[in-house]
Amino acid sequence: MIGMRSDQTSPVIKAASRLMALLKVENEQLRQGKPEQIEILLADKTKLLSKMEQALTQFEEKGGDRTVLMPTMGDLIALVAENQALLEHMSVVQTEFLKLICAAPVEEITQAYSPSGHYVTPTTESAALTLHSEI
Picture: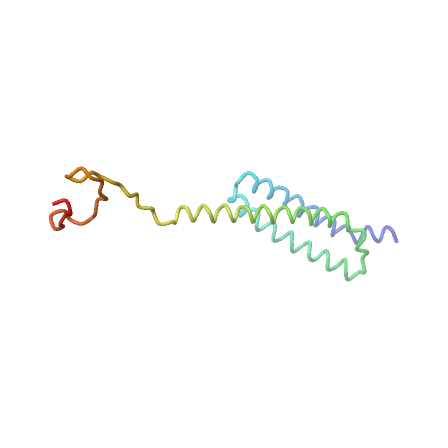
């Protein structure tokens, strides 16, 4: 019976271990600010999640003991939580960066001296067609 438990948990633990290894790599890339590397890992991550789901489904169908998986699942959940926090942080940073790039430029208000020596704000209107209050 103990050997059978081991056979049942082996695919789940193997799938979880592979997923955790990928998450560690992804988390490190996120910490280093390399979002382009995250996209490369996405296909592998999707495949590993699918394998993990299949292994868990088979484990459940065979009546596997969930308590045997608790240590591994605890480690996986911790890595997933860290990954989620890092992805959310990267998303916020990139959104703020895009806001800076896409924001309307702030026109710098310059002041100049008028012919009478007072400060005035230059206008974009043609000076030949405007009346100045100093005249």
